[in-house]
Image (tube, rainbow, N blue to C red; front, side):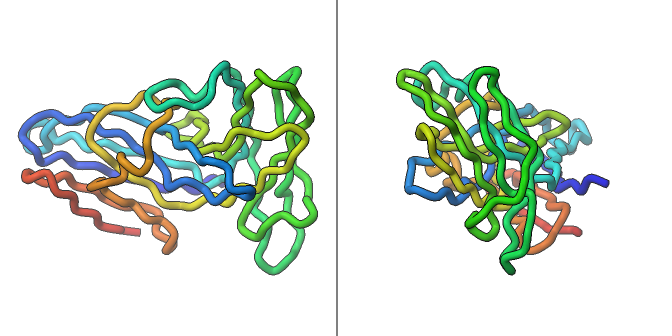
Length: 222
């Protein structure tokens, strides 16, 4: 049975606000530049006027993702087009076995059913990419199931014939503004003065309130 992480947003500012959601970038092996995508965006009216609450749900299941692109990642642009994802496990800290390794195919684009990898970093999963030649661009990383759909959350540009280990972090952010899901955003800039919903402590629900003065209040409730 699926377990969901839930963020409930309440807007106490007088005017309707747009909100977007994004995740703390995963830790990747190899030191490549890490990019972040917006996961969800929605307008929300004043709570006292509308009684509306915006609910954002993430499936706790981890997903490996691959996406093809025609251009390097650019803020404000879609990260790519064709994509594939696989539910995957994380390598256990105790060195036990888990289905934490998937291999990509490029034509057709896809990811194999995960199996147990060797040497995968604890808390991470591994994506192996085959050989390919520039100008082909493939993004690989952590995908999440958000409100029923799967979105590539954060990623690096894949190198040909290489392994990428990805360690997801269960920390999400809420910010005012609008980014279409799947659009590359500047994580450092967007996270300034954003509300933080930190699920790493085991919470499953966090209530987030935008106060009338523009400050945030967060309250873990379960």
